Length: 267
Image (cartoon, rainbow, N blue to C red; front, side, top):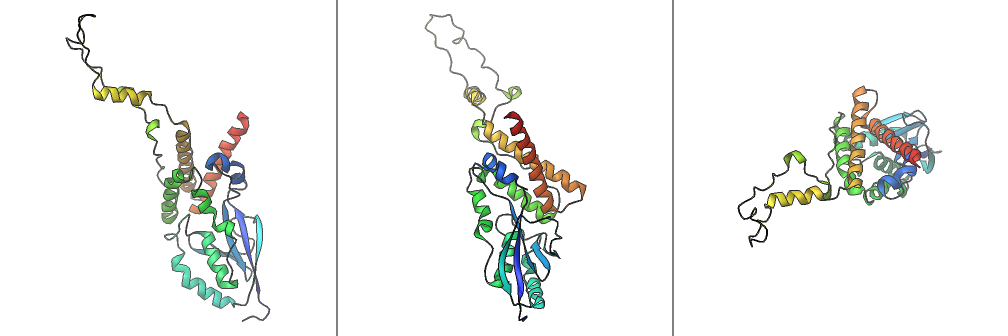
């Protein structure tokens, strides 16, 4: 082991470039500081999980300049021992094993930090998925997250996520509305004759209630945002210039920017 040791730091990036802080309250119903990505810097290289275990010269990753650098400590583990460790865990960190919420770049950084210095990454980074899923929008964005996970594992463009509307947001197309009931002799009897009108057919009554039910504008807006993100993601992947993880972050950023600009114009 090296007597002097090797300095270990954590590069912390915000994949949203500040948009999460600005728009998360509108999108999620609660403030989120950033969309965290991390890499561990040691031996002059930065190690991170992206479609497999990756390494780049320190400061030369595709993620640009880190938002902050966290001092993790000093390790006395020789580089060859560390590289053996990476080879051992590599089967657990592949495109197929990637999980956006539970097995991502930050979980990799945490395991590497534990091996090198016996301490993990800050809790606020690891707790981000739980924060997102505990937000009012958490259950609604789960289908989009699952679609992105499948895409990141296969590295192909996804199909658009279908938003599942609430019952109140379902309307009945006019072309399929049930025809009015055919009047019977009792229904057309002169007023005052004592005859009773027939009750509307059950199908027609149900259609009338559904047609008059109020729409759910918030649910519709959320669905549109999800579809926008998936369309943007598919277009970026079709260009073939970015990896799936980078395309996912860029797609979300572009949609958030569009909605953020629209909000500022309206105000």
